[in-house]
Amino acid sequence: MNKRSISILLSALIFAGCGSACGNAADQPPEMELQTSQMQNICELATMDCYYHNVAKYFQEDAESFLWMTKDKKFWIEYSGVVQLGIDASKVSFEIDGTDVTITIPEATVLSSKVDSASLNEDSFIVDKDSADVTAEDQTEAFAQAQEQLEDNARNDTALLAEAQQRAKSLLEDYVKNIGSEMGVDYTVQWVDLSDGTATDAGNNQQAPSETEVPESSTSSDSE
Image 1 (tube, one colour):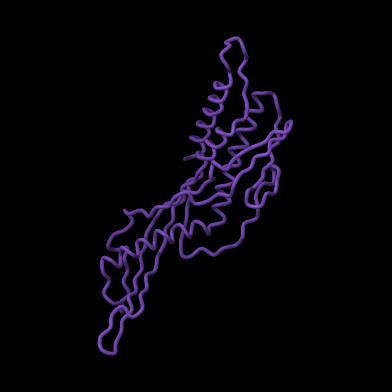
Image 2 (cartoon, rainbow, N blue to C red):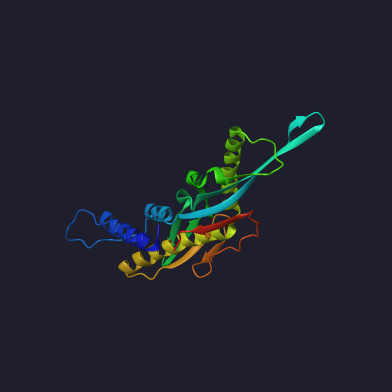
């Protein structure tokens, strides 16, 4: 989902929040307030679809034998896949102290992953010239391993995970500021990251990610 679509939906959520808080008296002005349910909806809107292109290796030692000779089974699969990164919305909460809004938010995680079956064809399987014969069962097993590796790669992609969390934080801060503007309140947002329980203000809300090597893959996301 692109930023324009999210902005439209965010505005719709704020408008809905206004309507739900209006009460039954027609002559009363609408009372807007921050709501956990709307923050959780925003986090769901903030998910990122990340596209991976990867090469998975399959190796089985001594897969075939004849007399004293053995052959290993060795081939590669080139494939593409999509991984959805985002926040577990059920863990998002907030507290208000005057004009200070403290939002508790978890780290971004892998929400789902899927190998693009359309990217798999005969040319996707590259068999080593000295390999033992490769069966359909081998290809099925290799496909399952590719699915697992796709998710592992995403879990190790600390830069994209940090971007996914920051994406959610930015939208949540916009929501708080917009509600505050409608109420005539200048809110200051602080964050509590569930990873370490440390509060940070909105201007400095990222934890430094650890360096992790990602095996042979290239990635793009639709966050723009």
